[in-house]
Image (cartoon, rainbow, N blue to C red; front, side, top):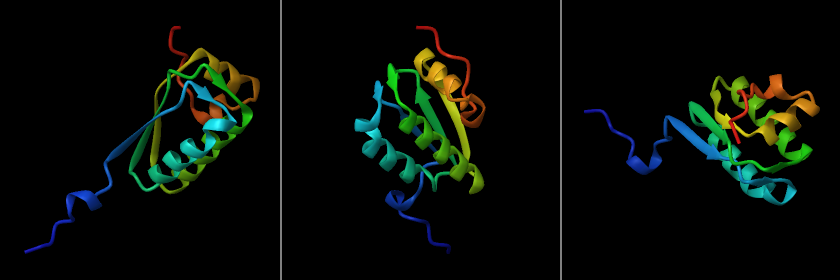
Length: 106
């Protein structure tokens, strides 16, 4: 009989990470922890619909997470992205790197 992994040891199929309303430097430690924890999951869904403030550091962190996850063969997708998040990514030329969806209606 094969051994099953205990429930608490199993990695969920898809990890969902909601980005904070204020996604600037102060939120980076918690966001970094969430993203690092998601790197071993087969898939991650990012939810950027609530983002009202974002800075370059947060966008760089998200870009690095997506690049690393994809290099590990993991899927990264978006549940949605706020206009603020999309505009900031567009200003920095990161829309394609982040594979952002069309901004959610305000």
